[in-house]
Image (cartoon, rainbow, N blue to C red; front, side):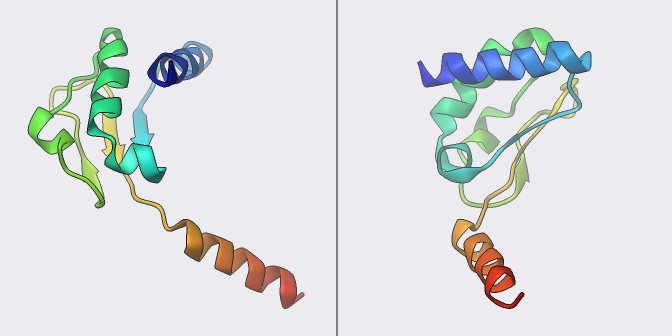
Length: 95
């Protein structure tokens, strides 16, 4: 169900924007969920997305998992939620 919902949202954005330049996976599942990424991107093959299956097994670092001939760049960008929360908290309490 999760993968289907992601497919619907990405597909809706692609339709509204007239295509996609890039899809970025981030956060816990996006960074570490190779199965989720493969399934979601499998749904989006009609957009010309092609992924490197070996790279898709990577986790926890910045990388591009689309192949050079993919029409859409697909990347994984890890987040540091704790750092973001800390920075926003500092900004709030120092005003």
